[in-house]
Every structure is written in structure tokens, then in C-alpha cells.
Image (cartoon, rainbow, N blue to C red; front, side, top):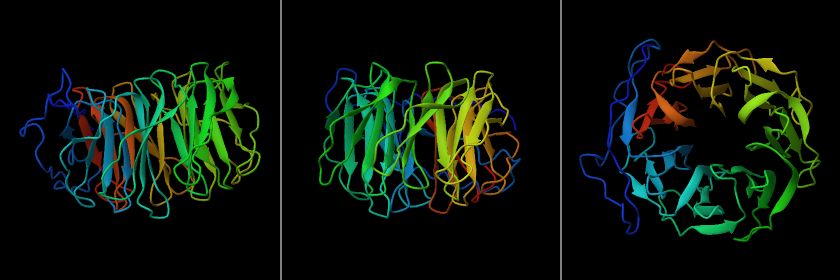
Length: 377
């Protein structure tokens, strides 16, 4: 597929409140509704649908599917505030950009509620280095004010967040001493104190095991992929133990259709390595290579149960590799084109089609989508 050159857009996200460098977007920069789903070409080798711009001037995006079936994307704007854009209806066009305020300095994490409760949670590192939280209680509900949860995060880090079996948030961050600190949501609107999980590591990724226990993955001080998990549900933690290595960057984790976790990481040789549990909650396979020359990966379980991994290639395009059948062998690498910076965000549409969001070389938000579930970008 030919590499796509992004057109230059000069959209600028303005601040929610007065600011010396704030400016409201112009109508010609942000049309009220963007209808991008007209190019329905199922040919995987066709040039269409190509990448489309949603405008803005953004940092690393985060995307999720809300309880009412609309995709929602959150980014840090040039003014440091959280900005938001969403589909106006499931599988449809897009709203205008809107600011949710705040003063952020790090990657954004968005977590959707389980069991259809409609809740959306956004967590990010504030400009003061602490963890900040914003919660929407239902689709299209108003957003309340930001809440400071305290702690201190390594500059540039984003928190890792999972929901426990009780649907309450479990938050993991790296403090400036590079040890992982853990915060739990309590009943009502309360939060626990911060707990320290000793051991200096790189950026951490959290996941919920098939048996309900929480697990953490990171790059250890010796460069190897290390792992620790709860000894029992809601219980204490094991020590950090090595799974493989050496690796570079932040690992990604996804859960197979049968509940087995699978971890992916960029090796120091430049390829994508992975290991998987041999049974849900059980031991781990040997480390294996999927080839490629990726940046930090993003892993997701598609609606059909197959795992897919996305990363930025050496050509700055978006590349993907996926399981051919749930839990089975892997396809060859394929390029989705484009040219982007930061880590991509991937989320499923209501109808099962995956959609990718990236920050283009012009700083705007760009996206591309499957033309039918499981096939053809």
C-alpha cells in the first residue's frame, strides 16, 4: 500500500478558561459534524477508505466505546487541557471538539464502565505531577469538575488502570523513585491510600487475569520483562519475576478469548516479542518473536476474540499483525499507511469494526477504520 502523506492542518485547541495563548477554533477548522463513513470499499488492497483528519492540535489520544455505542476520543490539547470529540451516533459522524478543562502533563487513560453502567473515567498526570480524575456517570451526561487523587507520577508517564471484578478502579503509577504505587477505588466516592509495590521498573502495564487477579508487567532495571500478580483476588502481591528479555519500552497486554493473558513488547533487537499463559491464571510460555521493527505496541482483543497488535513502523506508518483465529497462529505484518507520532489508540465500533486514531505529523487527530468487522481497512 502506498504511504499516505498527511495534509497539513493548523487547528488549535483553545482553553476552557481564559489563557494568554487560548483561541477558539474557527468554523472552517472544525465543521459541526464530520461524516467520514462514505468510502465503503471492502477491497483490502484499495486506497480507500484512506486516513481522515478530525483536526485539532493534540498529544497522545485515548479512545473507547461508550455504553450507548458511540466512539469517544480524548486528547491533551496544546493548552494542556483535556479535549474530547465523539461520534454523534453509533458508527456515524463526529461532533465538534469540546474542552473538559484541567491542566495535564502526561498521557491520558480512559476507562469505560462494565455491565452497561454507562460510566466513563478519565485519569491523567496533572501539571503538578499528581494523578487527576474525571468521571462521567452516563452517556451524554455533563462532566463534573476534576478531582485530585494525589501521588506523584514520573514526568511523561500515563497511569495504568483496570477494573476489578467489583467494577471499581485499580490504578497503578510510577512514582519519581520508579517504584509502582497502587490506588484503589472504595465504595461511594472514596479512595484508598497509596500502596507501594517495591522495585524500580520502567513504565507499567496492568491487566486483570482470567481468574480475577490483577497482574503487572514492566521493564526491569536489568532490561528484562518482569511480572508480578496478586496471590489471591484482592490479596497481596508476589515479587517481581522475570518472564523474558531484554525488552525496550512499555509492554502491552491483552486477554485471549479463553481468558489467557498475552504480553507483547519491543525487544532490544527491534522486533515484537510475545509470551502467553498456558492456561487462564497459569504459567507462561517461552518468549517468541513476531518479527517486525516496531515502536511500543498496542494490543486489543477484537469483538470476534482475535488479538490484534498495532505499532508505528520504522517508516512512521501504522502497522498491524493479528491472530488468524482466536488464540491461533498470526498473520503477516501489514501496513495501514500514514505517518504519525506517539502511540496509536484503537477501539471497536458498535458494529465490531476496529478504528485507529493517531496524531499525525501535522499534530492533528487522524483516523482510519475497518470496512467490515475483522476485515479490510
